[in-house]
Structures are given as structure tokens and as C-alpha cells.
Image (cartoon, rainbow, N blue to C red):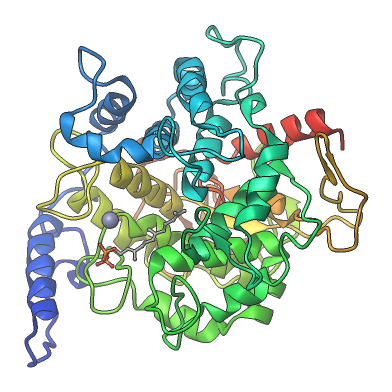
Amino acid sequence: MPLAPPLFTTLPFLHDAHVTPSSRDQDATASSCVRFLSYPEDPFPVLDRAAHIAFLESGLNGDKTGKLPEYMVALDASRPWIIYWCLCGLASLGIDVRRRYRSRVVASIRPLQNSTGGFGGGNGQLSHMTATYSAILALVIVSGPPPDGTDNSEDDDEDPLDIINRLTLLRYLHSVKMDTGAFRVALSGEADVRGVYCALTIITLLRLPTTNGLLAGTREYLGRCQTYEGGFGAMPGGNEAHGGYAFCALAALCMLGEPREVLSDTLDLKTLVSWLSARQYAPEGGLSGRTNKLVDGCYSTWVGGCWALVEAALNGPQKEVPLGPAGELRPENKGVVGSLWSREGLARYILTCCQAMRGGLRDKPGKGPDFYHTCYVLLGLSGTQHYFYYVTHPAAAPSSVTSADSFSTAPEAEDLPLTSAFLWRVSPSIPSVVKGVFEPVVEDLPAWPDDVADVGVEGDRLRAQHPLFNVPFECVDVVQAWVGEKVGF
Ligand code: FPP
Ligand code: ZN
């Protein structure tokens, strides 16, 4: 007998009699997933770490001659993305990317920066917000000391973050800011929630000043992107709700202030929870990006990542109490909502349906692996294994930095202190309202309401990622230390 519950191993009893191309695609996907999901394993296949590490390393090292496959020439405008996906995936698997890749990452990213501010997707290419976002995240991942605290053998004196010109970057951000509150993704490019999320990630992480109206109207703009379904479209005005845009909008809102306050004041949370719930399918267990579309492994991050933000917002700020064996801090956990989605279902989809035989992770059975899916499927699996919460704002929150090197401005009332992103915490134990089928691998937390379930086995455990920035959790402290040293707060 398979160990997965029948919900995840049998096709649905109810079937809509109206057959369409979409319903045929759905039936075919569910059937192919069931073939994998009903294969009895205990409790599901293990994560083939070695194969996924080799796959991701091939994205950074190329083949024996140091080249990437020819078909990847089409991704020439996505160089920083490829670097970010591979680094982030490797870091989630516990690889010390700082030691191995730091100097090569700096050498590849440095020429992408334009004198007019921001980074292009390839050498000699115009700056783009998504390229700038991924370039900065790649630098963030390799900055600071290696995780084990030992000296970095490849280290030179230059911190990777030092190559960022904060002054021109800030000017570039102003040049793509719209009066509507949105940010364009490039000069004369489209303005949408991706632009806003990338801008807010950059501004928040690098603590850039928000004076001169940099974020004027942005919160309201994000609120207008929520659609009648409850999810978010790319921009206001009748766009279809999609998981990619939902994550961008929610993460951006959580950077603008205390999540419970900002989300409940800006959105209709009930329809959001309803739309998000409808993204998880049975029997697949995976998540779809939009209504009547198929599950896809990458939504494990885009949609799965929304749950961390929504649950934390519903729970509100948590007090921390010493609970672990070493007196480590954990959330006090009074009246938390628990998991509103099936972490087990998603972990099972990922481990059974998304692992490619020769390494790398994929959208669904029948598709090949690629670096984008490998990164976001791993981040999604990591998300199923961690519980995110945020703590009370300290009484005297440090205000945001009001000068970007020589770009000096006097502190102004409109300079928002974007400190909420730094109040997030992570726990490896998950409060479960349904007894989990998995052995707890960490200490039970007696203060949790029911039992504590861990998803998967310890061998599958991945490192935690920051729920707003999608970089290893500890990297955020490293950037903050760098900003503090750089601009002195
Ligand atoms: C639909 O693809 C995909 C989109 C409309 C965009 C998705 C947006 C993101 C993934 C977020 C990007 C984030 C940043 C930071 C730039 P599709 O039609 O192929 O897939 P579907 O059938 O699953 O909807
Ligand atoms: Zn995908």
C-alpha cells in the first residue's frame, strides 16, 4: 500500500462533463502525476542532493571546456539570473558558495553595471530592474564570511557588495518610478508589480533613502493590483490573477510595513486566502499559478511563498520565548493559525514528480530540468520545511539610511523606515493542526497547540531562505552589517 493518503494517489471522483483543451491538459497532468505519487516509498523518495548539486554547478562551471550548452545563448540577457538561480539553489543544499564562487561571481557581475545606474542582463546591455535585482542578490549570496566562519581562501579585500554604485542605482530607481506608484522594469519598459518588488528589494536590502517621493503611491498601487479572484495581476485594470505577481505584490507590501497591518489595510485577505487555497491541487499536491492552469514546480516558491507571508500576517507579531534545548528563541505561539495549506502534499509533489533522473528539478513529469525550476523548486521545498514568523517592532526602530554615499539628502518625513523585513524569524518546526506522518527531527515544542510535525526526513532538509528576498536567511544580516559599515548607522 502506498503511504501517501488516497487524496494524493487517486484521480478525483467528480469530473466536469464539459471537456475543453484545459480540462484535457489537466486530466493528462493528474494521471501522469498519479503514476509517480502512487509508487510506494517510505514516506517519499529522498532528495537526490548529489545530482542536483552537480546540475547546478554545471550552470556556473559549464562543461569540460567551461562552456554552457548552446541553447542557452537565448538566455544571454539573463546572465545574473542564471548566476543567482544556481547560487541560491546550491546554498539551499548547504554548499559553501561564498568560498567556491565569490571571485568569479564578482568578475561576471561587475561588467553588467552601467554608469547610468543599475545592471543589464548581459555585457553592454541596458539596465533592467529584474537584472539589477538578480545581480544584487547574487552578490549578496557570496558576500560576508563563509558559513562555517573560516577564512575564505579566494577572498580578496573587496567585498562583492562594494561593486554596487548606490548613488547611480538610486538615480536609476528614480528614473523608472512612475507617478502611479509603480516602477517600470526598464526605461520606457512596462510598469508592473515585478518592477515594484525588485525596487523594494533593492531599496530595503541596501537601505537606500526613499526621499523625494521614491515610494509615493506604491502601497496603493499594489492594493489596486488585487483582482476579483483574490490574487494579483501584473498591474491594475483587469489583469488575470497569477502566482508570480501575487508573490511580488505581497512581499513588496511586507517590506512597506508591519505585515498584519499593511496586508489587512491594503487587501481583501479573505478572497486572497480563498484564491491561494485554490492553487493547490489534488491528487498532484503541487501548486498552480492561475485558475484552470496546471501545477508547476516553480509555483512552490511563487505561490508557496505567499502562504508564509499570509500566515504570518494573520498571526501578527510573535513574542519570542526561550524554548529549545539550548535556550534558543522560538515564537510563543499563542493562537496561531497553523498551516493553511498542505506542506506534505507539496513536498510529496516535489520529491516524487519534480526530480529529474539525471539531476535538476522540473516543472512536472515529462518536462526537462532547468536552472530556474531547480532554484525555485528547492526554495519551495525549503519553504515546506520551515515556519516563518515576525517579531514585534522594537520600540526604537532604526530609521532608514538617509544618504546613499555622496547622494546626500536631509532626513525627510517621507523617508520611510523600511525595517519590517528585518524582523522575520524562522523555526525548523512547524505547528501542525493535523498529526503529521513524519518523524519530528527536532525537539518537540511543548508550547505549540497540537503536535509538531516536520516535513520529510532530516536528509532532505534544506537551508532556510528569507521569505521576502529569497536568499539564504543569514545573508540578510551580512548585507545589513555591510550597509552599517558603509553608511554608518
Ligand atoms: C505565466 O507563464 C507567467 C507569468 C504571467 C509571469 C510569472 C511571474 C513570475 C514568475 C514572477 C517574476 C518575479 C520576478 C522577481 C521578476 P505561463 O503562462 O507559461 O504559465 P502558467 O500556465 O502556469 O500560468
Ligand atoms: Zn514553472
